Length: 268
Image 1: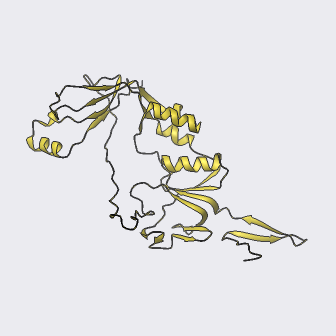
Image 2: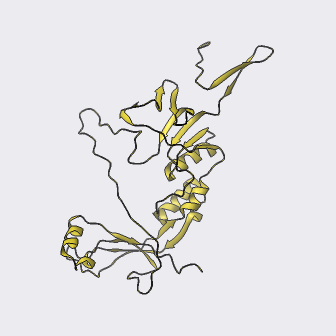
Image 3: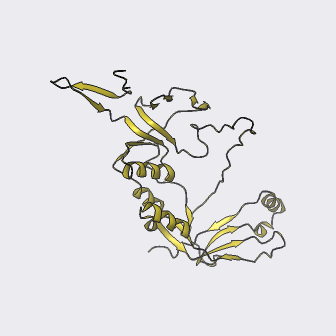
């Protein structure tokens, strides 16, 4: 300490000929380090750097890869988000449907062929375009995987993350050290950074819930069985498994659904 001023790690002090002190902050010192470069982490890094003038580092070992998930949105919600953020989100939809269909037939005495149609528009996010929109030259990207595991609140098994009164220090596998006032965990529901700990007197926190979806894009010849002008959000029917009673019973005991996004004729 000098004159009550704390000089955090990464700050070099130089003196001019007149003896005046000036500080040069290392490129490894940031206001915020965001760990996880999915949509949430990328958006936060973009807004902090572009709108709030913060120095930001985004850490994600898969940053250069295309986001694997298929994102669908209610159009009215996407439009409200664009109105608030002004990021050009409407241009980040590659397909829109004016209607949304649901099928719950076979349960609660609902006929198998009965369709529930919602007069509500749906959209498919162009994840490549969205990722590009959220890139910022003001954000430093580090493509490394943070080797970390929380063993208690703010206590970690290794030295890869340490907190102190002035901020946090992250040590990456390469040996690179990042210093930040704030670290944001945007790694998702299976985070190894954040521990879910109940407050005193509350029941233990449950394991995070999540949904697993398997998807693919294909060209369909002939009848699609769905209205191509609508997004089919839910199809919970199990009658297609009636040929195998065991499979049908499994589907009924652990309900799942299919969704279908008609993308139009294949490109030439």
